[in-house]
Image 1: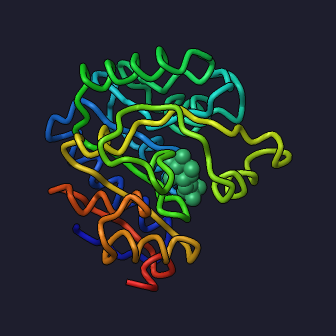
Image 2: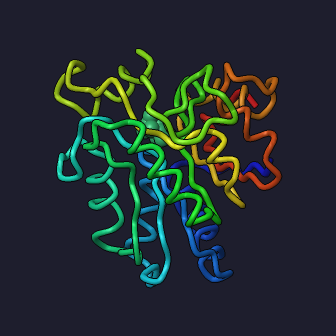
Length: 233
Ligand code: GLP
């Protein structure tokens, strides 16, 4: 893994922007995108740049089950507001959280990923080292599936909702197997709440108890961390 240490999320956003720019200029066709607060500084830089993604495709990692694309708490909506309104892609895919048929929603998404192999996948990191919504114990071979969120993830995500009961308990998420198929991976993590997960991901054993440790098996991973997130490395 290549580790880039930065002062804070703003500097991280600039570094991540350079990596996206290089990928765009190198002809990367499909960008895997992520939600959460960590990618926001990157998206701000992309949004105000003159880069043109209108002939490229984006594929997002995950979506809450039960939320429609126009729900303000959905990841669809997050992407629209934080990136796509300013920087449209030719086609942008997010799992269909409004489809109650999990088999169909997930197999449709696997087909999309198969038809659009991801050149650069952006990832955030959960406090328990989850990537996408792949919680500890997830198989490293899994493709897209319906997952139930752990209590710690529900608590962490409560800040985006009025109250904890409103946080959906399930999500459709690309699996770790899908993520590992991406040609390049870029993970961004900031703040001391991520320090333990970063240390386990980089230096700990490769184990399903630490979903992000699967990235040790991938040949081209870059991580951008601030001083607080790198504190236990
Ligand atoms: C959610 C998302 C993840 C994201 C994580 C961390 O659980 N499904 O993709 O990485 O939150 O979010 P944040 O960057 O806000 O800490």
